[in-house]
Image 1 (tube, helix red, strand yellow):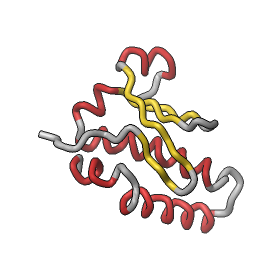
Image 2 (cartoon, one colour):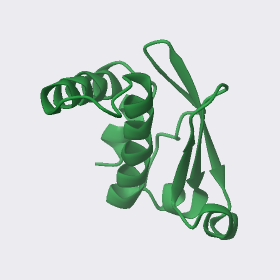
Image 3 (cartoon, rainbow, N blue to C red):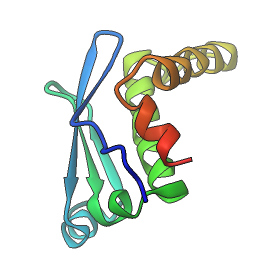
Image 4 (cartoon, rainbow, N blue to C red):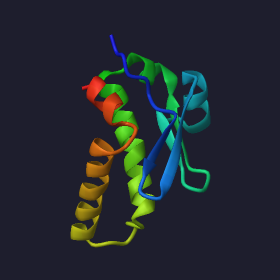
Length: 110
C-alpha cells in the first residue's frame, strides 16, 4: 500500500509546476493521453487519476515522462546538440530525484 501522496506542486529551478489529477475518461477524451504538460505560466501537468491511484511503475512512468517535458521546455532543448540535451536531462533528473517535492513519492512507487 502506497503511503506517500503525489505532491500538488513540484519546484524545479525557477519553475513551479502544479500537478493535477483528472478523471480517466476526461484524460483520454481531451488529449488521448495519460498526462499532459501545459508549457505556459502557470505551469501545470494533468495526470490520469486512475494511473496515479494505482501507483507503481506505470504511475512513475507517466509522471517522469511529463516532468521531462518540463525539462525540455525549461532548458530550451528544441534544437540543441546531443551533449547539451543529455547534460540538461542529467541535471534535471538529478534535481527531480534529490531535491524536488516528488522525491518521496518516486521512492514510494519504486
